[in-house]
Structures are given as C-alpha cells and as structure tokens.
Figure (cartoon, rainbow, N blue to C red):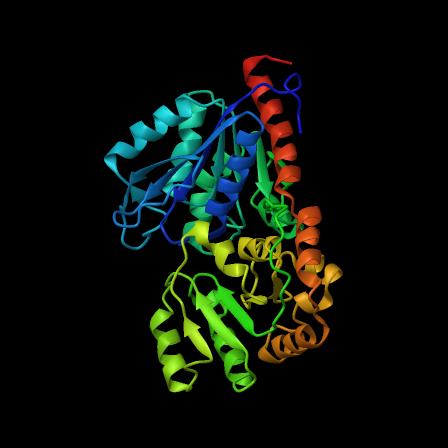
Length: 382
C-alpha cells in the first residue's frame, strides 16, 4: 500500500456503461465495486458513475458512492452501445470535473467514449480497463469505429489495463500505443471462518443465461448425474436463454434435480455460494470470470473450460478445476475427480489460494502507483 507521502488522497471516478439490480452487466460492475471499496479503505474517495435502465436501477452497495443516470438506446440495432439521455453529458461532465483521476471501464459504447472525451476536455488524467471488450471481431463497422474513435481515445489514456497476455496482444493489434498493463481481476477474501462442510451434492451455475455462457452444457451435466443425489441450481439474469432453460428442465424430467433459482443481486451472490460445493462455468473463451473468484473467496470449488483466461492458474492449484476438453465428457471427468478427491479441508485451501492469487489488495497497490504517476504528471507534483 502506498503511504501518504508517496501518494496524496485522490478523488477517483470509475465510469461504467451500465449498472443494474441483478448483476445483469457482469464482471466490470463487480470489479469496479471491489476496487472502489479497497481504495476507500486506503483513504481515497472512489466512486462510480454509470447508466441505468428505468425499473432496474442498481442497488447501491453500503459505503460506496454510486451515481447513475437513466438512459435509453439511441439506435435499436445497438441497444447497449448507444445508450444515451439528455442529462447524461452534463452529469458525467460534473463528475469528471470533480475528480482527480478517471478510471473508464472501456468498451465500444457511447458512455465510455464520452467519459474519455470529457476527461480530455477538462485535462483530467484517465486510465482505461477494457475487460476483453474491444477485441476485433472482423466486421467493417467495428474497424471504422476503432479507427475513428476507439484507437484515438485509448491512445490518449495514461494506461490501458488488460486482463491477460492474450488480451494484451489483441489490444496491441489495434495499434494502441499507450502503455498496456496486465491487471487481473481481484477480490476481497475475508478472514471469517465459513462452515467447513463438503457434502458434494450442491452444484451451481451462476451467470447470465446466454448461449456463450454454456448453460446448455450445465443442463446436460445435470441430466447425466440424474439419480446420483446431486442437485443442480441455475442462478442468473436472462440473456435470451431463460425460456429454453425452463422448457429443457421440464422436457428432460429434471424436476427435483435441476432448478432455475432466479437472478441474484450482487450483494447476495457470495451469501448463496457459501452453501454450494462446486460452481461450474462452462462458457467458452471466458476472459476472467469474477463469479469464479467470488466462489473461491467463500471456499467453493470451481470448474471452468480450458479456454477460460485463468485456466492455467486454476489448473496449477487443482487440475480438476479445469475441464480437459471443451465438451461434456471433459466436464464429467472433472466432476468425477471432484467427487473422488475433494475433502472438507478444501474450503479453507480454496480461500487461501484466492487470497494469494487474486487479492484485491495487490490489485489496488498496482492501481495506486499508476494513479499517482498519472496525477503527478498533470498536476506537476513529484
């Protein structure tokens, strides 16, 4: 942790495209909250500004300043990236003006674009964190946006934070010349002792219900273990697959084995995961899933696919945390290994692994160094 002499107390603004009530917008929201909470403990004044949809306004975490403005899409074809409202510019400008550093969770969206432009106009130093969201998809429209907006704005940032070495390479391919720094996600791991129970009979999927997340594989897994005494729970907001999930549960005669339990507000996720034995995320090419860190932080075991961005770190700790293949057979093999090898002591070991590998304290120490360097260059302080 930086000392008061090394770094002044800073007013730090985190900007997100969208925040919601039930964790609809995934990792960036939880990342921003974890970072802000730790920065505030260090004496800084860190808060969040985001868009929000009427009726799904975010539930503010206790102790955090989270301001939001209601927004609607300007373009139906781009419902997320074109979010806008008339008060947006003035409220965002006011928040940026009152900050020392702006930390933009950056995607090809109007709100982060505006945050970067306003920061430049007010001569406020800003950093960006892309969360795997600006990888080129090969479309002509994306290339045009990158040339005209994404690249110029990222090249004005002090530092661009990326999650993995793969993302580093992908962002570099966009001809980004600003400093790139690999910054993994982090999480607070409490010292409280959770019940050291391992019944090996409660498995869960906890993520947005969309095809990329692999919820279909989780259902197939439940079907395979039908009659074993294991229960499978699905948590998460609808991402287009909820109807299909519910129909599949009914048609496959999985009542009593598999259940959709609804979406969870972010403050309840870890409370629920404390009673889960194994959290399974069968999504392909998942960059850095916060839900896996949340599970480990409360002692649950986890299972991801080999294409997951943190697969190598997880595999070094426990080989069966990562499926050998991207298909159902690989998942089954890992589940069988979990059933045969896991012990009651694993919950404590999982938490300690998470503390050592993904500590939010370490993440924020790196951020403090970058924030201070950026602030000192603008303010003239040394």
